[in-house]
Image (cartoon, helix red, strand yellow):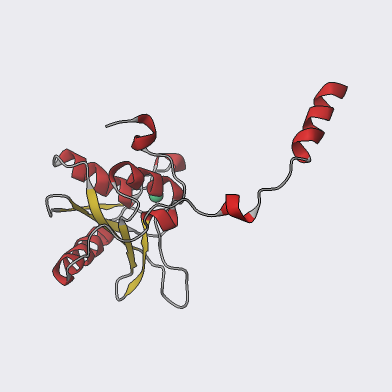
Length: 174
Ligand SMILES: [Zn+2]
């Protein structure tokens, strides 16, 4: 017992990281490709249409997502909740599943539509789990746009929402 507590003390007293060590890694956070106005509009339309189909009887927080794949195609998804709460599905996950089903595994842009951004509320962004799901198929510069049913909100890159992330490149696949 004494030995264990000594080890814990040693861990606790290890010197803090200096500012150099805390500096972000040198990977790009710039969008991988500029979205055309037409692509953005198409994503917005698809995500809003998906949001209207959401099954969200518990949270009353319908979400729609649309992804643009590497072939220029758009795939949409909505959240699908479940009485057994953890079994619910996010809109982004549904959109990615549709993309994979259609034969693509590269996402070029994402647009998420939720209730955020209204009455000074926080914009709807992908949850942590979905950020990781997007990481599987997107580059660090993947543009992630936020919107609601009337306005376009802020835009981010995947690297901004999921910094220093773990992905397929760590495993050398695919
Ligand atoms: Zn999610």
